[in-house]
Length: 124
Image 1 (spheres, helix red, strand yellow):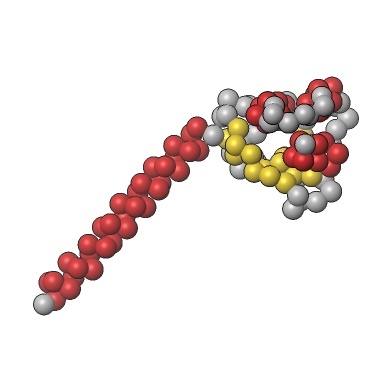
Image 2: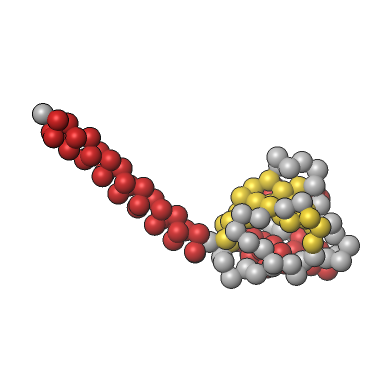
């Protein structure tokens, strides 16, 4: 009887382990094929959005350009051009540290932009 009880307990563990392995593999694939960045406003850290960007985006300007292009169905009114042309005067933060548009980004970074710009990007 003890042998049967042990094997019946191991069967669900084996099934769960296969699910966990499948989830891990899926996660790795998602992370390899996407760059996830949280765009947030300087006014409120709670007003933001997780955006999925092609991993070829190497810096802040690339992320903003790709996000703006993904949202082409909405009228952006030259927002990206405004951002890029004023890059030296904008306060942009990555994970709480002031950065420039040419700074590299990594998966999971939090980009904080002036509220005027983030509102236009996220609410247009």
